[in-house]
Length: 363
Image (cartoon, rainbow, N blue to C red; front, top):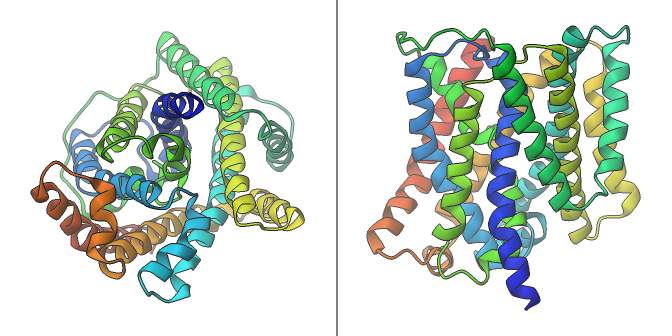
């Protein structure tokens, strides 16, 4: 009876978290990618292609690994590398991901706090606001996950309502020539802003995927939720001090959720509590260093892409073919082969091209 309850809870928790997390991270990263109010049809069609070709196979990968291992990503990589007779060096991707999670939380707070300050016009330095939000996020990370997700969903919905009531001042939809740099931005939105490769959906799906017959039942709702988040973002912009307050509050809740997930992975790996909080706090507070945002923001995006790249190479080329076939349990061998081609070839090449395109914007 308890297993059925956990399965039902996981059934709604992961998609709802995917919607909220994707919306909030995109809201934080959009200004850095110059897509906040410029609604280009060609760019969003390109993003839709990356969601289908890149995000969907990677989402399946996380769910399949959850079904196969029955534990969190950081803890599971030890057994995965042993099963594949692979070098223990591959386990580093788990550590890269779990450190990236609080780093992402700090970046989210920083990117949303700054524009919020401009709208609210508080006479307080930006670094002090960041430190206060970090303390609040750490405290709220002890609240139950279900409540955090529900609070986040409420904040996102209220933000959308306030934005559209006050008027978002968004540009009309229009078509522009497709540029090479847009592939990098679209890939970052599809993978990094969706939280893929970090083991978050792997982690929140654990209770439910063990009782499901195929990975599709968990992967597709998460993917649809990520799509809906970006559709919602297309009609959103901070337009009043009240909406800025709500968005900042929601960012704090999302950061708390991310910290909770990272702490759970570190606890599962039996990392000492002192080391856990040292890692979390340093990854958060590094964003308060004056002038470092210009360096950390591109690093955040590239770091996220590298994690996704390593996972695709590990699952596609290092793990044995049979390891994920049963976990996927596709209804057709054709679907499995298509997924395997996507993970082995399409994902690595596309991510490398995206990294080149993004770095080209920085030079």
